[in-house]
Image (cartoon, rainbow, N blue to C red):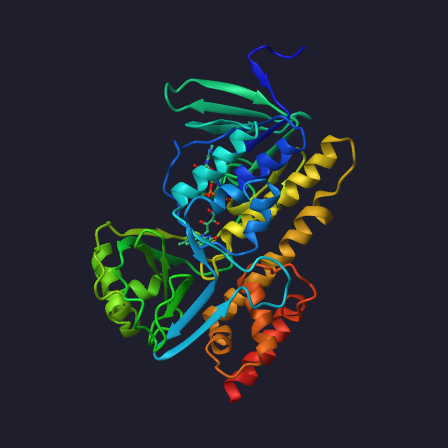
Length: 419
Ligand SMILES: Cc1cc2nc3c(=O)[nH]c(=O)nc-3n(C[C@H](O)[C@H](O)[C@H](O)COP(=O)(O)OP(=O)(O)OC[C@H]3O[C@@H](n4cnc5c(N)ncnc54)[C@H](O)[C@@H]3O)c2cc1C
């Protein structure tokens, strides 16, 4: 007989970030009972403000697209890259893979709250300021220990399945010893929000485009890069990513350090010459993470709770939502009595796209993908294939640069370097 104090639920989702909110809504739409447990009170700050077009496919699937479109977020049509006098831009509306060509640049506090509220409107129960502190997967039905942050009281929930969307909290990887070190070197991001006062009429001889993220390569340190993500309220997110060795000899003070990186980069300094720096700079390091496996009996890992590669191509939220959509679909079938294989139907197909991004992230830092991006004479069809990947369509096996990313990138980089 079940002990009465253990709450009985069908599915528990850990975390109400993008992966948790999308997964919960999709399961609810399919008639399942879903409880989301979120440690923080929303709205809360999160990094990751530049979305890719593909993530809106999952927002749409979860019935939230109209609400996102009506929220007044900054429209985004693509990505621009600058290195010294070189400038290159990719418009997601001009891409090889069919699908969405536009998306948004968002304050994540607002975006994540909107998604969570939309899930709640669809009937998902979300409990904020309640934290998962322990798990027990020894019985067929997993049990979770939950602490209410308001009074410190703990209670237990038992369910058929747990989806871990806890992001950097990495709840199940930590508690089930699933963590595996990332192969990427330790990098650190320094970032802030500024009142940008960008003069859109003069930049790179063509005007600054608020509808694109701007990625700027440091003039001499090619593995150091900046993001500039304009919002719709006259402000923007600004950050620099550099590995630990690049911080040596620089100011310890985070504000001074970010300002020094910017001052060394004339094209970006010009863009930000009138900016008002009104928010303390924050640092986040060692964010790349990996796991031994993405699923086990009674659970699957979503989004950042599984693997996080690197921020350079803004792929985090898209991968998080794609994993949520795949897991929710598979779990729906499992709860309906079907036998499903989480390895071949979830982990392997999800990793295919993640591995595509991985090749281009590695190519960014070793310079080969930068050679391609900054190459001015690439064939339009090849740029359209690259544009698809930058728009998030990294699972489209019809795209040769997705199907064979390593070989294609190597050949293309060699051609660009020869010219
Ligand atoms: C420097 C940097 C820049 C980035 N830029 C971008 C970008 O431009 N575009 C992009 O798409 N991605 C970007 N990312 C990645 C992006 O931040 C993440 O991929 C994305 O937020 C993952 O979503 P998620 O739902 O998996 O997790 P999160 O958004 O992290 O949500 C997890 C939630 O789980 C909750 N939680 C944690 N522990 C517990 C617990 N014990 N119990 C209950 N709840 C818990 C947390 O409070 C949180 O609300 C960037 C990342 C970094 C490091």
